Image 1 (cartoon, rainbow, N blue to C red):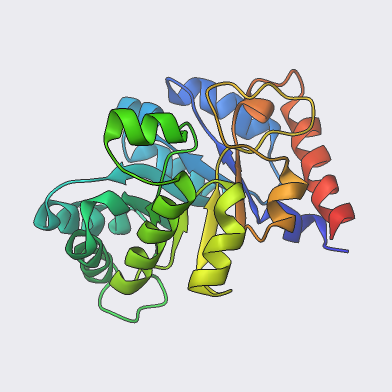
Image 2 (cartoon, helix red, strand yellow):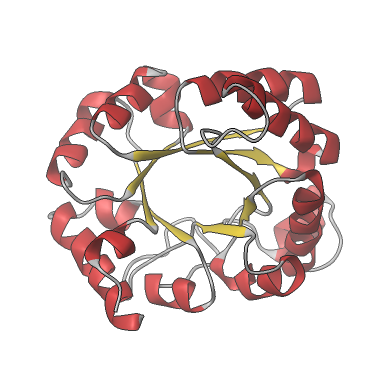
Length: 245
Protein backbone atom coordinates (compact mmCIF):
# COMPACT_ATOMS: atom_id res chain seq x y z
CA UNK A 1 0.00 0.00 0.00
CA UNK A 2 1.34 3.45 -0.96
CA UNK A 3 2.13 6.05 1.69
CA UNK A 4 0.20 9.30 2.00
CA UNK A 5 3.15 11.15 0.46
CA UNK A 6 3.26 8.81 -2.53
CA UNK A 7 -0.46 9.09 -3.10
CA UNK A 8 -0.46 12.87 -2.70
CA UNK A 9 2.42 13.20 -5.16
CA UNK A 10 0.21 11.83 -7.92
CA UNK A 11 -2.56 14.35 -7.32
CA UNK A 12 -2.65 17.81 -8.89
CA UNK A 13 -5.05 20.24 -7.28
CA UNK A 14 -6.36 22.71 -9.85
CA UNK A 15 -6.21 26.22 -8.40
CA UNK A 16 -9.02 27.57 -10.56
CA UNK A 17 -9.56 30.85 -8.74
CA UNK A 18 -9.92 34.46 -9.95
CA UNK A 19 -7.26 35.81 -7.59
CA UNK A 20 -4.46 34.82 -5.26
CA UNK A 21 -6.40 35.70 -2.12
CA UNK A 22 -9.00 33.00 -2.79
CA UNK A 23 -6.33 30.52 -3.84
CA UNK A 24 -4.36 31.22 -0.65
CA UNK A 25 -7.31 30.13 1.51
CA UNK A 26 -7.36 26.74 -0.19
CA UNK A 27 -3.57 26.42 -0.09
CA UNK A 28 -3.60 27.14 3.65
CA UNK A 29 -6.25 24.49 4.24
CA UNK A 30 -4.10 21.89 2.43
CA UNK A 31 -0.82 22.82 4.14
CA UNK A 32 1.39 19.80 4.74
CA UNK A 33 -0.15 17.59 2.05
CA UNK A 34 2.61 17.16 -0.59
CA UNK A 35 0.41 17.31 -3.67
CA UNK A 36 1.12 19.12 -6.94
CA UNK A 37 -0.58 22.48 -7.49
CA UNK A 38 -1.88 23.20 -10.99
CA UNK A 39 -1.98 26.87 -11.96
CA UNK A 40 -4.19 27.55 -14.96
CA UNK A 41 -5.04 30.52 -17.14
CA UNK A 42 -7.53 32.24 -14.85
CA UNK A 43 -5.23 32.57 -11.84
CA UNK A 44 -2.01 33.11 -13.79
CA UNK A 45 -3.48 35.79 -16.03
CA UNK A 46 -4.83 37.61 -12.96
CA UNK A 47 -1.74 37.38 -10.74
CA UNK A 48 1.22 36.44 -12.92
CA UNK A 49 4.50 34.79 -11.87
CA UNK A 50 4.08 35.60 -8.17
CA UNK A 51 1.60 32.72 -7.93
CA UNK A 52 4.34 30.27 -8.88
CA UNK A 53 6.80 31.95 -6.52
CA UNK A 54 4.37 31.68 -3.59
CA UNK A 55 3.76 28.00 -4.22
CA UNK A 56 7.46 27.19 -4.58
CA UNK A 57 8.17 29.05 -1.32
CA UNK A 58 5.70 26.70 0.37
CA UNK A 59 7.45 23.66 -1.06
CA UNK A 60 4.86 22.63 -3.63
CA UNK A 61 5.55 21.22 -7.06
CA UNK A 62 3.85 23.32 -9.73
CA UNK A 63 2.22 22.37 -13.02
CA UNK A 64 1.76 25.57 -15.06
CA UNK A 65 -1.20 24.80 -17.29
CA UNK A 66 -1.15 27.51 -19.98
CA UNK A 67 -1.47 25.20 -23.01
CA UNK A 68 0.87 27.13 -25.28
CA UNK A 69 -0.13 27.00 -28.94
CA UNK A 70 1.63 29.42 -31.28
CA UNK A 71 4.34 29.59 -33.90
CA UNK A 72 7.45 27.59 -32.92
CA UNK A 73 9.71 30.53 -32.10
CA UNK A 74 7.10 32.18 -29.89
CA UNK A 75 6.55 28.94 -27.98
CA UNK A 76 10.31 28.53 -27.59
CA UNK A 77 10.54 31.95 -25.94
CA UNK A 78 7.52 31.26 -23.76
CA UNK A 79 8.94 27.93 -22.65
CA UNK A 80 12.24 29.57 -21.68
CA UNK A 81 10.41 32.17 -19.58
CA UNK A 82 8.21 29.56 -17.91
CA UNK A 83 11.21 27.41 -17.06
CA UNK A 84 12.96 30.35 -15.40
CA UNK A 85 9.99 30.59 -13.01
CA UNK A 86 11.00 27.24 -11.53
CA UNK A 87 7.89 25.26 -12.47
CA UNK A 88 8.06 21.47 -12.40
CA UNK A 89 5.81 20.86 -15.40
CA UNK A 90 4.16 22.85 -18.19
CA UNK A 91 2.19 22.05 -21.32
CA UNK A 92 1.70 22.89 -24.97
CA UNK A 93 -0.96 21.87 -27.48
CA UNK A 94 0.06 18.88 -29.60
CA UNK A 95 -2.06 20.41 -32.38
CA UNK A 96 0.72 22.98 -32.83
CA UNK A 97 2.78 20.32 -34.56
CA UNK A 98 6.08 18.53 -34.08
CA UNK A 99 8.36 21.51 -34.69
CA UNK A 100 6.45 23.64 -32.18
CA UNK A 101 6.80 20.92 -29.54
CA UNK A 102 10.52 20.55 -30.28
CA UNK A 103 10.89 24.31 -29.79
CA UNK A 104 9.14 24.06 -26.43
CA UNK A 105 11.85 21.63 -25.33
CA UNK A 106 14.58 23.85 -26.73
CA UNK A 107 13.20 26.79 -24.78
CA UNK A 108 13.00 24.73 -21.60
CA UNK A 109 16.57 23.54 -22.02
CA UNK A 110 17.77 27.12 -22.52
CA UNK A 111 15.78 28.32 -19.51
CA UNK A 112 17.42 25.83 -17.17
CA UNK A 113 20.96 26.16 -18.44
CA UNK A 114 21.30 23.56 -21.15
CA UNK A 115 20.02 20.26 -22.51
CA UNK A 116 20.17 17.40 -20.06
CA UNK A 117 19.87 19.59 -16.98
CA UNK A 118 18.17 17.88 -14.07
CA UNK A 119 16.29 21.12 -13.44
CA UNK A 120 14.33 21.02 -16.70
CA UNK A 121 10.59 20.82 -16.07
CA UNK A 122 8.54 18.03 -17.58
CA UNK A 123 7.00 19.19 -20.85
CA UNK A 124 3.72 17.53 -21.80
CA UNK A 125 1.33 17.97 -24.71
CA UNK A 126 -2.43 18.41 -24.55
CA UNK A 127 -4.07 15.86 -26.84
CA UNK A 128 -7.87 16.29 -26.81
CA UNK A 129 -9.56 18.34 -24.11
CA UNK A 130 -11.65 16.24 -21.75
CA UNK A 131 -14.68 18.39 -22.60
CA UNK A 132 -14.60 17.11 -26.20
CA UNK A 133 -16.68 14.29 -27.60
CA UNK A 134 -16.75 12.80 -31.09
CA UNK A 135 -19.54 15.07 -32.31
CA UNK A 136 -17.59 18.21 -31.44
CA UNK A 137 -14.34 16.74 -32.77
CA UNK A 138 -15.86 15.71 -36.12
CA UNK A 139 -18.54 18.29 -36.82
CA UNK A 140 -17.19 21.45 -35.19
CA UNK A 141 -13.40 21.11 -35.22
CA UNK A 142 -13.30 19.10 -38.43
CA UNK A 143 -11.07 16.23 -37.29
CA UNK A 144 -12.22 12.85 -38.56
CA UNK A 145 -12.22 9.63 -36.58
CA UNK A 146 -12.75 8.84 -32.92
CA UNK A 147 -11.45 10.84 -29.98
CA UNK A 148 -9.14 7.97 -29.04
CA UNK A 149 -7.63 7.85 -32.54
CA UNK A 150 -6.91 11.57 -32.34
CA UNK A 151 -5.38 11.24 -28.87
CA UNK A 152 -3.08 8.43 -29.97
CA UNK A 153 -1.97 10.32 -33.08
CA UNK A 154 -1.09 13.36 -30.99
CA UNK A 155 0.59 11.25 -28.29
CA UNK A 156 2.85 9.56 -30.83
CA UNK A 157 3.69 12.94 -32.37
CA UNK A 158 4.57 14.35 -28.94
CA UNK A 159 6.78 11.36 -28.22
CA UNK A 160 8.50 11.77 -31.59
CA UNK A 161 9.14 15.43 -30.72
CA UNK A 162 10.86 14.32 -27.51
CA UNK A 163 8.25 15.47 -25.00
CA UNK A 164 7.93 13.74 -21.65
CA UNK A 165 4.26 12.86 -21.95
CA UNK A 166 0.74 14.04 -22.63
CA UNK A 167 -2.42 15.34 -21.04
CA UNK A 168 -5.38 13.10 -21.88
CA UNK A 169 -8.57 11.66 -20.50
CA UNK A 170 -8.03 8.67 -18.21
CA UNK A 171 -10.13 6.68 -20.66
CA UNK A 172 -7.37 6.94 -23.27
CA UNK A 173 -4.47 6.08 -20.96
CA UNK A 174 -4.44 2.31 -21.68
CA UNK A 175 -4.14 3.00 -25.42
CA UNK A 176 -1.40 5.58 -24.82
CA UNK A 177 0.48 3.05 -22.70
CA UNK A 178 0.14 0.47 -25.49
CA UNK A 179 1.48 2.79 -28.20
CA UNK A 180 3.98 4.94 -26.28
CA UNK A 181 5.25 2.65 -23.53
CA UNK A 182 5.20 2.74 -19.72
CA UNK A 183 7.67 5.61 -19.25
CA UNK A 184 5.67 8.14 -21.25
CA UNK A 185 4.00 10.37 -18.65
CA UNK A 186 0.21 10.67 -18.56
CA UNK A 187 -1.57 13.55 -16.83
CA UNK A 188 -5.32 13.05 -16.57
CA UNK A 189 -7.94 15.75 -15.99
CA UNK A 190 -11.62 14.80 -15.88
CA UNK A 191 -11.27 13.22 -12.44
CA UNK A 192 -14.46 13.06 -10.43
CA UNK A 193 -14.76 11.13 -7.15
CA UNK A 194 -17.74 8.77 -7.06
CA UNK A 195 -20.98 10.73 -6.72
CA UNK A 196 -19.54 14.03 -8.01
CA UNK A 197 -21.17 16.06 -10.76
CA UNK A 198 -19.37 15.82 -14.13
CA UNK A 199 -19.62 19.58 -14.76
CA UNK A 200 -18.37 20.45 -18.26
CA UNK A 201 -16.32 17.27 -18.62
CA UNK A 202 -17.33 14.55 -21.09
CA UNK A 203 -14.70 11.85 -20.55
CA UNK A 204 -14.28 11.27 -16.83
CA UNK A 205 -13.21 8.66 -14.26
CA UNK A 206 -12.86 8.35 -10.51
CA UNK A 207 -9.35 8.74 -9.01
CA UNK A 208 -8.97 4.99 -8.43
CA UNK A 209 -10.20 4.17 -11.95
CA UNK A 210 -7.70 6.60 -13.48
CA UNK A 211 -4.77 5.11 -11.56
CA UNK A 212 -5.97 1.60 -12.38
CA UNK A 213 -5.92 2.53 -16.06
CA UNK A 214 -2.29 3.63 -15.70
CA UNK A 215 -2.40 7.41 -15.12
CA UNK A 216 0.75 8.88 -13.58
CA UNK A 217 -0.94 12.07 -12.38
CA UNK A 218 -4.60 12.92 -11.78
CA UNK A 219 -5.95 16.46 -11.84
CA UNK A 220 -8.71 17.24 -9.36
CA UNK A 221 -10.40 20.62 -9.36
CA UNK A 222 -13.92 21.44 -8.25
CA UNK A 223 -14.49 18.31 -6.11
CA UNK A 224 -11.72 19.67 -3.83
CA UNK A 225 -11.82 23.44 -4.40
CA UNK A 226 -15.61 23.68 -4.05
CA UNK A 227 -15.78 21.31 -1.08
CA UNK A 228 -16.93 22.58 2.31
CA UNK A 229 -13.87 20.77 3.72
CA UNK A 230 -11.17 20.66 1.00
CA UNK A 231 -8.57 19.03 3.24
CA UNK A 232 -10.87 16.18 4.22
CA UNK A 233 -11.91 15.68 0.59
CA UNK A 234 -8.31 15.56 -0.64
CA UNK A 235 -7.27 13.16 2.12
CA UNK A 236 -10.19 10.88 1.22
CA UNK A 237 -9.00 10.82 -2.42
CA UNK A 238 -5.46 10.00 -1.28
CA UNK A 239 -6.83 7.21 0.89
CA UNK A 240 -8.82 5.87 -2.05
CA UNK A 241 -5.59 5.63 -4.04
CA UNK A 242 -3.76 3.94 -1.17
CA UNK A 243 -6.48 1.31 -0.75
CA UNK A 244 -6.65 0.69 -4.48
CA UNK A 245 -2.91 0.08 -4.68
